[in-house]
Length: 184
Image: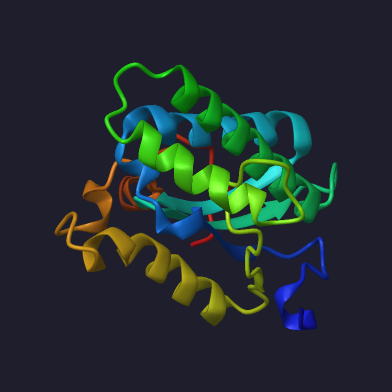
């Protein structure tokens, strides 16, 4: 992997993308989105995760993250993804109402079996493609890109209408689902 896609400076914020394996639309249900936001909150409280912005789409998540120095950012990201994967898997296995359960589990199990880094289950694509946001221009470009994602997807007409995003926080100047470090 090229150096430009590694976390080299723990003092900087990074734009990262977490993509669900096979682009499965798992985050169409609130219960799975809440697992992810709970994991963010845990990492903020216990690992020093700083969140500048975020959006949960149906099959991927964009975040602008940093660390307070308690833990390395790459370790926090690993733990965030691991927790989310384990808990969504548990919810899927225990679900009696998930209509796509067998299909989703088949895809995640097949991906895990075919990847030497996993035993039998893979939820996330392993690369996060971290991009260091070392200038104000880069930061604002990624912040706008992240917040406009639900609009470009056709889910809402305004970024602040998407519940699982920090766009409303930035528009109204208040903290909502996830505590933010204000970037703009």
